[in-house]
Length: 240
Image (cartoon, rainbow, N blue to C red; front, side, top):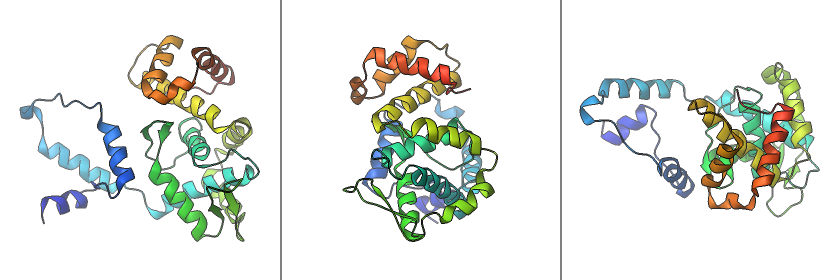
């Protein structure tokens, strides 16, 4: 078994296309290796890779998140702003705010936390199951197919405990356009990182992190970011 085969066996997947290469570059663009070589424990690295392989998602994990996406798209079927960006942001909130146990791999992208493989998988499963077809040139972009609505029988199986929070997310953000929900989710992710890194929250720090995210975030004026933060606190849409 050569080195590449060994790593694949342990669960380390290599980028397979241009999108995955770009995602990998963005993920590690600010990474600095600070450990000394003598402190690296190969056995621990191998154990972590084995654990990663054991925890890789199964087919049921992918299907579960497709059911969730189908409910969001179905409920917002007439929403002209419902496309890949808005759907991803709502799934992000379902996972991080509502606490739904769904497999995702959100990374830092220009438009906020994003998972390119997630949306490709959902679109493929939608079409394979004849639930929806995504059409970039259509309005709305998700076109119902002849088995649309079939997912409804599975909602209680997967999300019975989180249905009230799912309802809240759909009702609250269903009226948001893609740009508005992008701002909220980017704030949420920056806020979450503050908590994970044990940093003290402040409006100024969040604004600073938003502008450091990407050049694109300059479309959001400072006062608009502040208003969004205060709205999130009022609605209790904050990480814990």
